[in-house]
Length: 430
Image 1 (tube, rainbow, N blue to C red):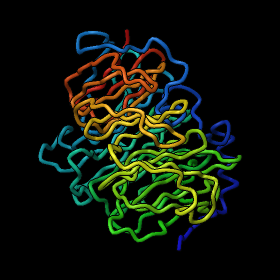
Image 2 (image 1 turned 90 degrees about the horizontal axis):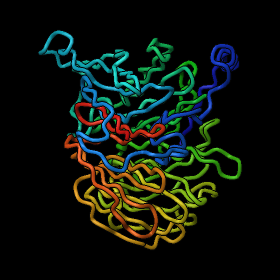
Image 3 (image 1 turned 180 degrees about the vertical axis):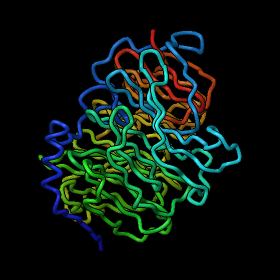
């Protein structure tokens, strides 16, 4: 049975008043401008209202800057009000003792126009005893920051979560939710009004947690209802609205939960077979689309209007070939677009799951694609971005090679594309 542990603090009203007095209004889940969270302002990888983003570039062409970055991290860049925000795990040896196994889990702030590093803020230490082995495609700083108004939320999975102002000054920090990880950290939180909601799917006791975004204190926790044999997953939840009701869609091992962000109540759940779930769900044409990830991923289309266990009633269709383990999907008009980890681009009809095309792009893929001006940007792990036309006809418009390992998803702001590689960040602009 699903257990909900709510923490209704006596200070909740006081926290609300504090948020109004000091921050102007209660926190909204919709960013005011820019690409201020994972997968952009709508959380679906689509850049709205942009124009003149390059479709062609090289290391020598249409590069406004390439700025080397300290440490390691696969958090995707976010851009807000002329600044870029990234997280990184910077070995303590970079600041002194070269033999130290410890890391400074940090926030890096850059000028979005010049690429100059404005600030590097150490948020918390990761000590050797809390540094288990991670997957070769992971980092100690993989979740993406969220910028909301005058605050930045920076999450490091099992290591903790921090909230700072735009200059990096600490507002709060929570390191009380440590759990035993498998392969490291992963999923990014979603900000819903005054709650920061994220998954804690480790080796045991998987759950979804909401923190008070003003204080960092736990508001509610929801245990996964099923006993999956492999409990670890890394999914970023998605916020949707169904008939005027908010739902946080949180896939994990062998199940997806729809949770009321207000109180942690499970609205519906659907069971499947899958673990190490990574792709963020999308909501399009009144259906939720997700991947079940490992070992053999299925693409599921779910009607989110049900209640309780909807496994046998609200699954509209499923597709079992060439589905991504890692990259999230895109949706536009009547189409769903995806890229598998081994480089198969696919377009399917959203209503039916019928395959429109499958084409080999080539290479390995981890980054989630972005859509700009009816063009889809697929960036592979070697730094090659293939730009294709949106729509039912597969047409390659350009191929652009940076020649650097790339696992992070791109960001778009105005007429510029931002790509993080293993060693640097690029601003790509005509």
